[in-house]
Length: 283
Image (cartoon, rainbow, N blue to C red):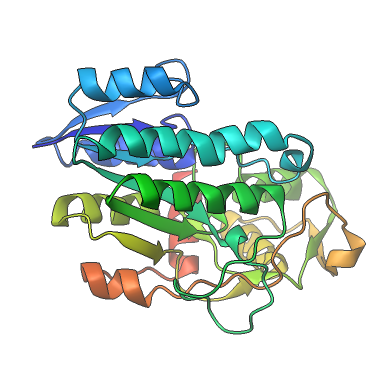
């Protein structure tokens, strides 16, 4: 039995974690968001972890507004780099463990084969840089830490690409969607399931990659979303990245190699379309 702190419990992944907690009642969970625990306040973090005898932390909290981050570097740094350091230090000095969720944005997206965990990082956005510093801080301050990099996260909770494309598909006769950025979507419930496997089988420190299986563009993803949601009245046309400029640079190729996490924990990873279908049925 462990006392486990979940941060960012109102987000996509945090909500999925709360659903799965019921299946593991041997542990006590402290589900927090900013109202319950301000993770940017180091003293508050130290006190919470000590007073509640926290054995492990799953940090689902982050600044994820990628474009806004370009103009809010200070806040992004605080949430994505410094707050994870406070959490890691607080639980690390107790001999506890921590799972830090990170991102494909730590890479520049110039690969043509899936990224492995030991490849050189090269973030080219404020979001990516701050998340990378967060990774390094957690590894330095908590010996029993896992970094799980993921990509293209969606769920039935919060705002995400899947829900936006369903809404726009029902509202508009035509949509332009980028076809030259390639990656793999991740259903947050699948990521939450893997986290629970790691927690209950035992934390194996290191960096891991997790997304669903397969490779797809945003354009093809949108076409699949509309097909599975029964949207037939919206024409989706492919756009080049250059036709849709954004403040933050996106990786053109961000497929993650999942061999390590599959072998370490003996898991099978669902194909992206199967998971998308499950999510849309829930919606």
